[in-house]
Length: 172
Image (tube, rainbow, N blue to C red):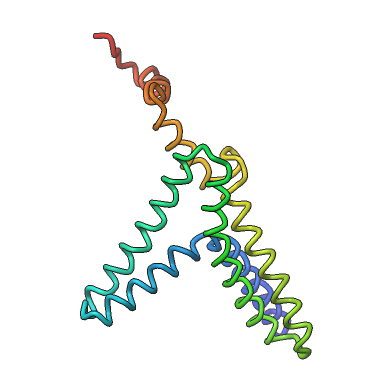
């Protein structure tokens, strides 16, 4: 029974770490959503309007950043957008790693060291997920698709293989 508990604890910590690293790039939209929800609640939106405002604010933040990242050709502007997403992920990583260090590390110095390492790793993961080439990650594929669709004749290039596969003749 003890061995099963240890295995389940290890599996749970592994799943939790996987979630933290996977969801790190959504820290900024989540932060915006929470702040917009709190502002809406305090301004009188009520219990039903507050979640709507929060979800809309977070979704618009994520969509605007993806479109801006896809449409810009400037490397500096892309780095600023990626940094805006990586900074809240770094703060979240610090606090998550500190909370996990409180569980198993008695020394305050080592808790801070582990928290700083967690912040670097989680912030770095968020940075890399946004800045690595598009063919290497899923988030980059959508940005690459938006970039190709914004070019003048890219829509025809994207639709031609689909039209040929379906067998529809465009010229008719």
